[in-house]
Each structure stands twice: as structure tokens, then as C-alpha cells.
Image (cartoon, rainbow, N blue to C red; front, side, top):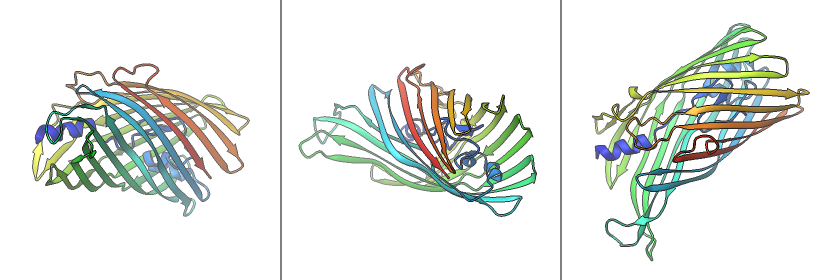
Length: 353
């Protein structure tokens, strides 16, 4: 049981919305999120202090890719709504926002292999899906014009399921895992504008989820202590048209704990803490268009893996402003620089008003 649980945690470990600087480097992973968009406030809740009027935003994503694990090739293909939010100022100092986001998700299907056990001698494949839904009631307070703080309770819902499908005449399926979990991940953010050319962002978050899951027809009470995530981001305005964003993010994976029926399953020897580094640039054309390029790393957290799954992403995007409507498209790929045995491509469309 413990080996199975550890595998599920390592292979589907939730990195909860690690936003950095202007942009996010996990599943959102593309330079479409600027301080004018509400998605940014999921990382740093202080950011909605810049919103002057009622604002809306929504974004969708298509993800595809593949990775190898234990002699199997897993395919990933998914299209879904990843963000929906609203924000407005209550007065000159206080702003409020609410959003629904999917900060982490995975859906994969393995290649067919010869069945190793009954009920059939035919081939078998594994299919799994995991979602984290985050409900974000955000409030920001401007201490002064250049300094703001914000908080987000970060209400979480996690749903996961996994089953094996047999290539038999009746296409039989065996459910391996099914679970629903609830929790919180509070975050605190600070934003300080030194001058027109330089801004700094700080954020920290940590939380937990708990619930019940069924594994091979047996029900377990499960609790996960999520890792501490601390981020430092900067924005430098080189000119009125050109801006450079950079960030460093620390994820304390070794501070995570997993409990099943009250028993603590030690996984710290299987995982490592990681740093993510991101740099990107944005060039505005006539205040209506924007071109964005960037690069970031995504280190693999399993310290004992015989596979090299560290990824380096190239990211690019364009933005168009039509009156009060802002449309952004972006794409990212880890296939171009360092794919190794894991490749991921993301395509995003964001609309804000």
C-alpha cells in the first residue's frame, strides 16, 4: 500500500498555482498573465489593488504531451477552462476579487501492454485524471500608493480517479483509485513599486487537503500537508514599450506529509526541494499590441528517479487591446530544448475586460 501511495504522490504531485513575477510557470506557464489581468492575483493577492474599475477575465488551455514511466509511454491531451474571475475596488484602498481556477491538473493514458494478471490475457492500459479546483476570495489593501498587501484563503477541492482498461471483447475496466478531498491554501502577497521603472512582488503560501479515497475497493481517510511555496518576482520597465520580468520560486517539497488512516507515510527520501527560475520580456507596439517571449525551468521533484524529467520551456505570446477588451494568446513547449523522456505543450487563450 505504501509503495502505491508514494507512486501516486510522486507521479501526480500537486504544484498549486506557482505564479511568479508577471507570469505563471506551471500549467498556465505562458506569458499571457500581466498585472492588468486577474489571473495574476491568484499568485499575488496584493495585485488587485491596481484594479480601478469592475473587471472580468477568463482563460482556456489546451495541453498535449507525453512521458515515459516504468516502460510505459503516457499520452496527455486535454482542453478545459482554467480561470474565471471578477474584481472591483471597494474604495481607494481596498479591492476585492473572486475567481475559480484550476492550478494543477493531469490527465494521461498509457500505451497498451500485455496484461499481467486476470481477468484477461489481452492487453491493458492505465488511465488517470486529477484536478485541483481553487476558489479564491481575494482582498487587497493599499497601505500607500506604492505599497499593497493582499490575502487569499485559497479554498481547494481535489478530485482524482484512476483505472485500468482491458482490450477485451467487453472492454472491461477496473477502478484502481477514486477520491475527493477538500482543504485550504492561504496565501499572503506584498507588492512594492519602487518607482516607474522597478517593481517587486513577494508571496508565500502553504496549506492542506483531506478527504476519502477508495483504493482497490477499500476506503481510506487521507490528509496531505502541501508544500510551502515562496516566490520573489520583479518587473523592470526598460522603456515605455519594453519590460523585463524575472522570478525565483522555492518549493519545499520535503516539507510535505501524507497520511492514510492516521498513519504518516514518509516520502521525504523520495523527493527534493526545487527552485524554479523564470525570465521573460514584453514589447508593446502602439499601446494596442504586445509581443512576449520567455524561458523557465521546471525541475522534476523525484530525487531517486532513474529517468531525467527536468524540463525547460520556451514560451511566446501575443496580446491585442480592442478598447477595454484585452485578448491574449500564448504557447509554451518543453519539446524544443530539453525533452528527454517528458514533453509538454500548452496553448492558452485569455480574454479580459
